[in-house]
Image (cartoon, each protein chain N blue to C red):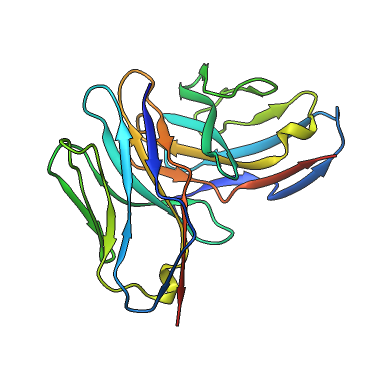
Length: 113
Length: 112
């Protein structure tokens, strides 16, 4: 089954404790990206990757890092989480760019206290 | 820059009612337009899309027409069901940024 898998689904952590949210896709897609969803703001892009070893900033990259060492994986790293990073995070992938159909993971609800 | 504006929710309808969710956009060039749907506890799924002016996207009884003259892509369905209850996002993609730009989402609640 074609899917994007994120882990964990839920995470509560404390300010400053490094964490990683994993994302994996099994569709051989070139393009992957991370979004955060906040009430009243819709989804905003954090980072994206057009292929292996190629990443770039989206609209709200501050406080986040990503890597793309393999085509299928695109982890999101929060080196020093802060409460304003409490949000619902989605990983997405598509064949080439987001003007083709995007497939989304089920989301990771992160709470930073 | 590019942006999407969609109607505020929530929208509450009775089963079999007609649905319209308005969406307008601002963009340079000729973006592709999308409606994504988010069911409770799930990620977003593509509902329909249109890639050029006057195209009509359709799926599961939902329709939207790409209107360049009014920069709109309104979502419609003739008869909603309880199972259509979800959050609906209008989005556009195109240009050098190669990303989806979303509206804020509209919550639809359909009552039996």
